[in-house]
Image 1 (cartoon, rainbow, N blue to C red):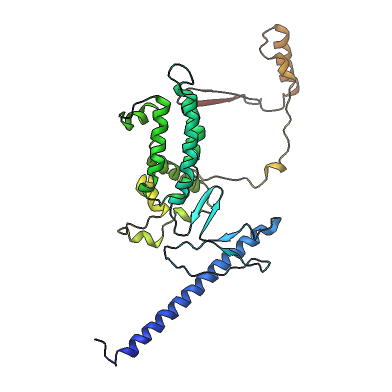
Image 2 (cartoon, rainbow, N blue to C red):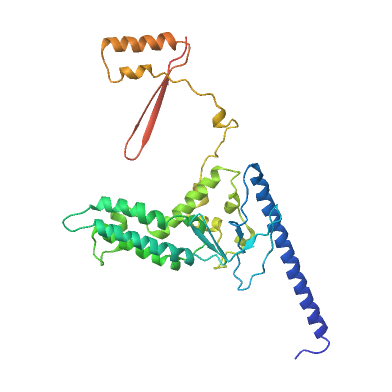
Amino acid sequence: MISQRESPLLRGRGWFLLLGMWFGYTLLKQMCQRSLFKVCNLCECGFKISSTKSAAVPFTRKHDSVPISLILRDSTRLQMKNQYKYLGLTFPRKGSYSKHVRSVAPKCRSHLNVIRMLKGMSWGAGKRSLLTVYMSLVRSVKVYGMEAYFFTSPSLLKPLHKIQNDALRLCTGAMASTPLICLHHTWDEMPLLIRHKFFCLKFKAHLLTSSDHPAQSLIEDCWQERFPDSPSFCSFNMFTKVAVDHSIFASAPLRIPNIPPWSLQKPTVDLTLLQFVHQTTLRSLHFFSGRIYTIYMTIVLLYTDGSKTSTRAGCSIYTEEKK
């Protein structure tokens, strides 16, 4: 039972809660508007933002999200949507992977019919050819953009798991009772969850090589990581830390030269020696050595060669000291 003395206090708490919500909404709107203006400033070098093709999506798990009004530089109001498709990837408001899976799974299943058409018991393409068709038509569509969905639940990937298993059985002619681990090991095909982590780690290694990458904040520690007991939260940094230890990444930073490539001086290429390729006559050898020592005597000569095997590659460089 609430007494009359406590009711003004409760009403004060209610007003304080509404004031905090209004302050949070105003702060969020200002931060989003400031970030949008930064994007508009970057596009002033010759690009023009299309207001009809651009939209804003508030990523939240609330059922009724508070709409945020954003405007562009030309005072055009940016439209708000619950989901947006960008470069073939569907980004819904609640951050679920299910909409993208529902759009990718039918496309991959239709491509499986191509493998069925090329396959035959006594005629048709072989296993290697069918696996090549699978990798180009099915796997490329299935794994496209998986780095953006690092937070997805493994249960949502079950339709894509089934498509991969059906494709491997079609390509190899294996029975339905064949263990999947045997198919993956025989044809060097990673399971979908392992491939998902592989792409995320590959993208993390790319971020470590460039310090000015726009997505550099993904591999930085955030305050949410201090609460690891929350099963519903997983950042990109947490996902990659769990997969592989961070200490193994010993990538060198990518150094971009100050001079742009189109401003470099075009090198001079001497193509006159091509006419003596694969010729061992005395005349060609005399011409080759004479041209080298008469025209390029004042230039440092570098002799290079390279070779590779199925697992390794090597190169060598030799130069003579100038007298």
